Length: 366
Image (cartoon, helix red, strand yellow):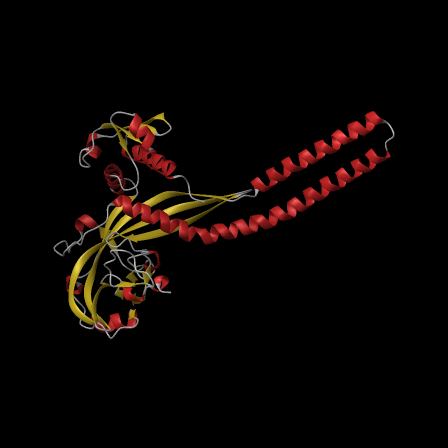
């Protein structure tokens, strides 16, 4: 369903070069020469002219070529340029200064929103306001078979936890965002963030997961039409072959029988060929392109909770979004999905080696 990573990267680099007024030349399929304006390349720590390789083999065989892949330093720089260019925005939620504080009833909100299974009631160890970043991507997804259908899908990723924030976008619908350069609140702490390359890879995985139901729906619909058309096609060739076989049996001339036998073989071969063409025509292919991206900065309260499980004292951070006035479901440290129900890691049948988190979501509990 998804495109090859190298093709995704090549498309991104071509779009980036066009957006910033640069140039790109394909030396080979996996080898590209890029030229970027100095005002774009210099702030990112890149030269104006450089060569990139999209495969390990091309990088090993070419002197001076930078290997571009998910997680590489150069891709992080290039994605950073993209997020500051064209339709990529950096926005900040606007809140009154009086709202930038820990709500007095925060623990009550948390207890109503988050459940810790097999544990006593949590208590708050500390709470502080921080500025968090959320990357929001809008993708145009195309489904192509005998016809082409398109759909716009939004995907949101928490830059600090790589959590899937897509389901939280509805809660943030009424939040007003302004240009990040003019918004107040920069004195608040900024927790560590994952590089843009990791965020983009996580967004791609979420996109594939969320596009899959629609893809399967189109595939089922196309398969139904395909079966109907294939049934008509096979019936036609079955009847044609049956008539030719009857004529072959009735023929007394050896040459005529040979010609009819050859016709039968040709008919059967044509049936296989046209059947394969029909099946291919109704096969559904999906592809996606990035339409826009934005980094949204929102103030959140990080509440450090202390939770008692049997004789163990466990800890979990829970976040209250001051912009949307809501407690966010906890990001599972294993699958990065969000959950309102958490279980102690000790409840897992086989916790991962060197696993340090105290809680996981129900998906990992037998």
